[in-house]
Amino acid sequence: MATVTVALPPMGEISLVSIWMETMLYGLKVLVLTSTVLFILCTIYVAASLRQLLEAFIYVPPGVADYATLYFVDYTLPMRTLKDVLYVSLTFLQDIILIWRLYIVFNRDWRIPIFFILLDLACIGTAYADTILFAIPNTNLPQLIPLTITSWALDLIVNVSVTMTIAARLWWMGRNVASFRADHSSGNPYAYSIYVIVESGAIFASATIVMLALYISEHGSPFPYAIPSLDVASQLAVLTPLLIVVRVGLYQNTVASEVSGTGQSTSSVASRVRLPQRLDVEHDVELHDMSSRYQSFLKV
Image (cartoon, helix red, strand yellow):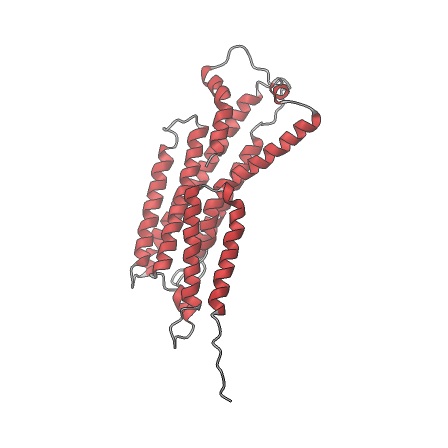
């Protein structure tokens, strides 16, 4: 009897695609928290990662040993270049959102964030230049180390300085508001907001420090740890601006539950603040517009 050969289905390719779809479906649970542009860029980034997996493990040329390692160490491939461009773009948008919040906190005074905008443009310019040079075949990678370090260092400076400036502004505003409280409490009413802002900014800043340290420590090598870490950092670039919205939303729900449990109303809470009859014009505007600016601050 003739032997019938049954062709095996491409289980490797099917498994990779199904696992990728699983992660996409899981991500849809938090879709309501993301902005459209950031989510689209993240989707393209994940799709490029899927293409990389297929090209490295499925579409393997015959007779090539350890092809996956050779594939991922080649930084001139189209998918690698696309992901690098997306990472720089996501980082730029994350910085713009942070600077926009600085602009809102300073009562929409454009003179305050202009320095950080120029600094961020310098950061993004060096990052895009570094990405283009990385994509050129036969490029001497060690020669690009100063440019890469400069772009990451500038991004770290922008992230940390803008975050601390926002926190300092909220602390100053909270100290002024606390002076008009009827109970003369010494606590800063914006202490929780300051903590959330610093915590959110510290996440991406920590990731940048880790990548920078890995990049410097891998001098002369094909950067086996620093470059792949961009996959994690690109997702953090999107998540960190949105964590503020999540934390504040949870805090507001907690406060609302406590108020409803004690039978208090927002008017009774407002009556605790004792304001003098005459206020400085600038501070009066801050107090009058504080609620609307706080809501604008949370919008992404």
